[in-house]
Length: 131
Image 1 (cartoon, one colour):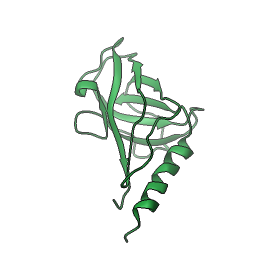
Image 2 (cartoon, helix red, strand yellow):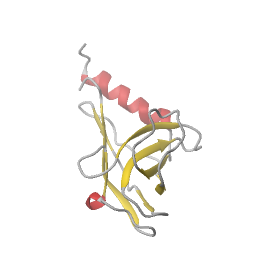
Image 3 (tube, rainbow, N blue to C red):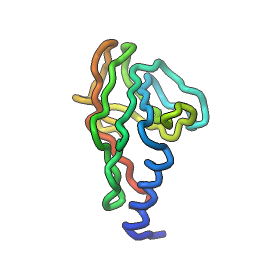
């Protein structure tokens, strides 16, 4: 099936609206749980509250981070996956891989995160399935 760029962009913008303003991003060691409905797994390395307008407007079926995404690590380890929660911290809406060339990229790849380190996200994009 092919859909218009306008429909792809609208679908992506709904993702941000559904998750809401100032969501919570957590980065963990190891592999993500099988679904977002399952409990967290691995060691939580860093948690950050994202800015109110945390994603740019979708364009050409792609939506990218907006503003500064950063937080202070509370533990040391190798990042493996992230989970994105609504601002009320009640629903995990999204999860994926972390690292250079992955879905969520910390500054300079951050192969290892050290407790007390400021972690800044340098890249995060969502692409429409049919883009």
